[in-house]
Image (cartoon, rainbow, N blue to C red; front, side, top):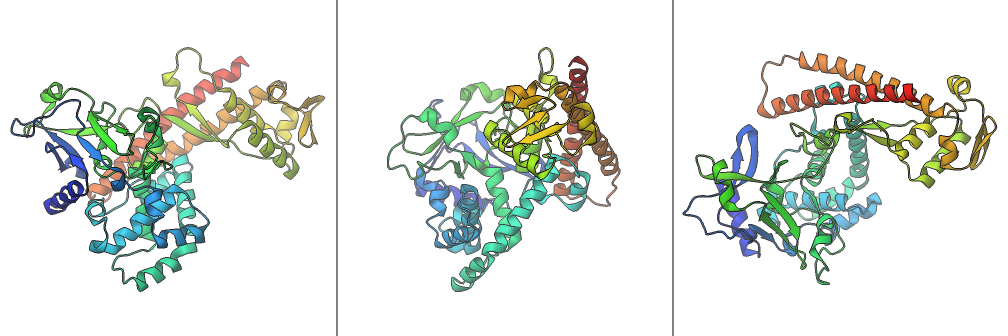
Length: 454
């Protein structure tokens, strides 16, 4: 990252209506990271605690409303049959980067990281080590989806590149990079709008949620953030100190500066690594994504899917960390419904022996003589809770065994030279496997206890 690029960024940012306190600077940090520092030296601009450190006006915020102004973005989305905010912003960032210095957004695009982050950029060895984990499944599914999307509109991008004489790349790797930018750097405007009150009718992004906010997106995460951000009534985004400026002097470095951070939110480790390529050292909000199979005869699978739709259930149940519990470990009712519905299988001998014969009468079904026509009846099926929990426990135990084997193999890798990025990826995958292995074992032990008490 060159000083010229950061100088160009701040110059353009301020000339286009953005405001940034002169105490702020973008700087390289240990570990190959980059962040925003808050200078506390007495020679800097006097700062009032209630004043925003940063104010980004609506026209400098990139949302779907910004992206859809681009004809090539609109054409690609129409061809893909997808007008999601994520795709529109990713295509906008991809095409604006390809324009190079001719882009009106060059001042911002030029400061974005050159390489992608998160699960989309894990190497083959890391992906092999993550086999069977929800992180690997999410990465595979996303890459497959991105490949299909890019295949659907790459000819439009190629034609645009030729006609407009665009110098930069718009290939699949570039699209993957742009998608990682959206995953790792966008914020939710809707999450803060409730605090802002009624929005100005002329706000350029009033209907949008996901947004790239220049300078805010350069702040790193902290569980104890020094900054917070909000959406103003006119759609601008403002960043404030979380604490009085004089209270953080004791944390100052030898250069009289501290890193300005904000919270990225409460997420399980799988989401952290998937979106950002790292996870917090101590995450008290971790949870294990447990996928419930939809098995049985085709007719019963149709009934089960209809039930899931009616009850608002998904194939993924988030199993919370028992380490956060107070008292007996329990599962939410929705999770128990998912486990019980998944456990029923009219083609399984084990289910027949443990639960009994299943008779189909769409959209209902019967187990033995009990007609199951409500979710309450589902939970009343004799032995079903115990059977469903036992299946879950066995699955968790198998997953833990697989992760232990993968962790042992991955930690024994001995590569001749590790670049800083490769070392960071190695550490992240190792820490993720170790943390999730311990988590799954804790959950399995608690589920076993629940089986014994049914």
